Amino acid sequence: MTERGPLLAALEWQLAAGVDEVVGFEPTDRFAPPPEPRAPASPPSAPGAAPARARPAEAAPAAAKDTAAAADLDTLRARLLSFDGCALKKTATNTVFGEGPARARLMIVGEAPGADEDRQGRPFVGPSGRLLERMLAAIGLSRDEVYIANTVYWRPPGNRTPSAEEVEACRPFISRQIALVAPEVLMLTGGAAAKTLLGTTEGIMRLRGRWRSLETSGGPVDVMPTFHPAFLLRSPARKRESWRDLLAVRARLESGRP
Ligand code: URA
Image 1 (tube, rainbow, N blue to C red):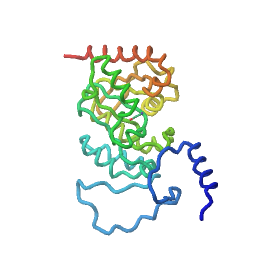
Image 2 (cartoon, helix red, strand yellow; image 1 turned 135 degrees about the horizontal axis):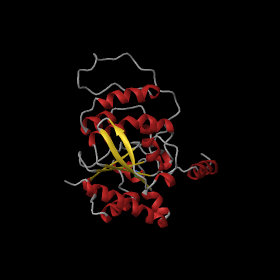
Image 3 (cartoon, protein in one colour; image 1 turned 135 degrees about the vertical axis):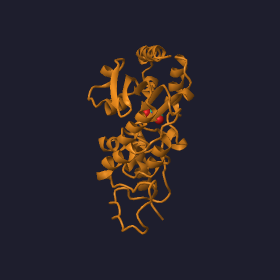
Image 4 (cartoon, rainbow, N blue to C red; image 1 turned 45 degrees about the horizontal axis):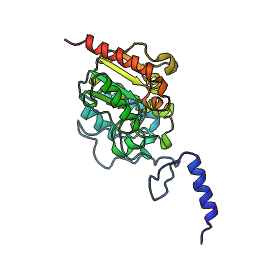
């Protein structure tokens, strides 16, 4: 019979390390090297077929070429679903692609899916999402009018910050979503999204509230970096600054109305 003491100690150690979910009943060695690619069993894919799976080291350049060729969001989503260049996919339940109108005037980008988003396969559906919806309602917008996405598409285990490598692997997919939606205003919530897309090392405290411009393959887009709703839930006193950012976004959208 197995001793319970060491097992309990191992469990407690995992809980202390931030493990908050069981992702499978069979143990998986996630550090094992990926199997060597085998010679293709079938002939080369036909035009329009799903792209070949990239190994992580070559993932970003391969994905960049692939995403640039995606002419619409459905094609881009299909390419993301068959993309294997980000290790986070292995531990996630669902892929969380962006959602909203394909030509939304406002696009919002967050960092990464959390537990609720991972379960439902949709961005911003947990506590942060509920606050985001209230923030949008305060400037007269409903969630359905806005395109909402993240910089990475799979929940990092224990909600840790995605690594630079994970963000880089996923970057072509957020860049292409922005170019395809071509919003009038892009609101970046939190330091991770702002740093990733603006290519800066400045923190969100300095970045927020100041308009920036982002060059995309669809033309320049006005960008407003602001606090992440999860930060506002922890620090409600910062909602005052967030409100100013939202008013600036609303004014920009109103000034662009025909
Ligand atoms: N936080 C994010 O940055 N994105 C989500 O989708 C949910 C929480």
